[in-house]
Length: 130
Image 1 (cartoon, one colour):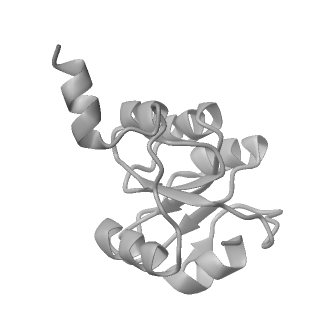
Image 2 (cartoon, rainbow, N blue to C red):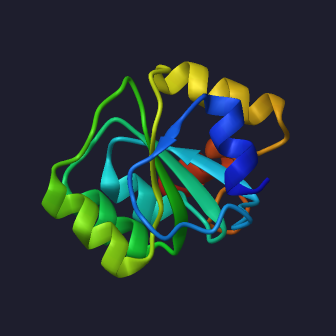
């Protein structure tokens, strides 16, 4: 799914300048815990979050996240937007809730893929309980 399709699907607007609307993502990941993003997200993903601080940008860069969508109309401050522009990570904002945004992206074909050995959450929990 490309950025133009994401904008239409989420009725979102772009917060960063110099954005390529043909930039594409293959997966979606939704989280407010940045430790989860580092642990479970995979490259070529869009991050859907309610957090708007600079740590989101730094985490996205480390996790090779392609696009960040802020939900519920939340907007980061100008310094965070500037950091995203420096890192070339497009920022979008939608008035949708996180649940609604993820549902719409799922309906359009984006899926989440687990990063660690492609295990299901149940298998991962069982593997960690020994």
